[in-house]
Length: 289
Image 1 (cartoon, rainbow, N blue to C red):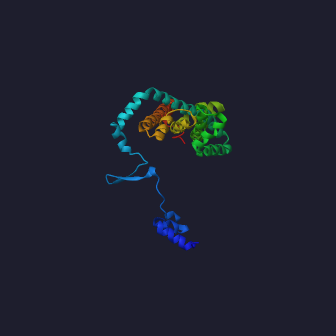
Image 2: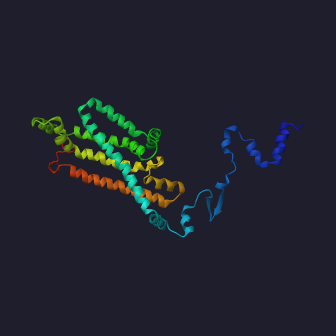
Image 3: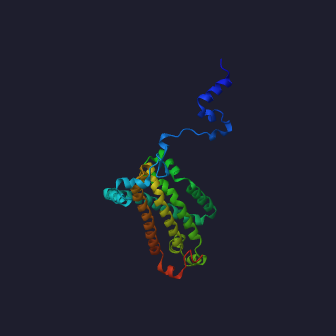
């Protein structure tokens, strides 16, 4: 029977390339050099080392004889009708979420100005909801509401509440107190003071919250494609999975355009909603606080 030491020596002599691995200390196992996967084998081309497992992005279009812009134009020419439909879907999801947020957050913000002790708790809860990951909220509503546009709209609605609620609360609280007392002196009721004094004066601050919320939700609505809600996110994530830059651009550029368009339209709406006399005098919540 061959002793264990002799067996090890014979093995080293037969296979000297295994010597380092056989006698590698346990604490330095990370220094071993395992065989590389064939898909990551390296080859020398033109003096530069490239991995075969990755695509050469720059030569992808050269091999086809087409430029990236030509591919994009070809994509738009073939899918322009579907792109318009996806844009409408995206606008519908984000717009419905913002409108729901306005109908809930603005009245709630007005009520909280009458209950100051409760305001901190409610705004704190809304702030906690804002910190939750968007994908987690979308996944949370799948067992309850299923997949599609409805769970996406409900999930994005929670994200729209905080900016509108906080700006409504701050805007009404910063209305000039003398103007509030003037309304009381004229015999206005609580509702009349809110409608004719506080809301018009705080309108620029409230609209600022709505604009921020709308721009955020247009960007976040791209994640709705993960739960089958559609929208421009379908193009973005399909392009990322299949490496189709034309698909990524076709989804990302309209999203950015929609965000800019929404901010512009809401800015015009803010100007229209603010009374002209208040704009000239500067007695708004922003200037009269």
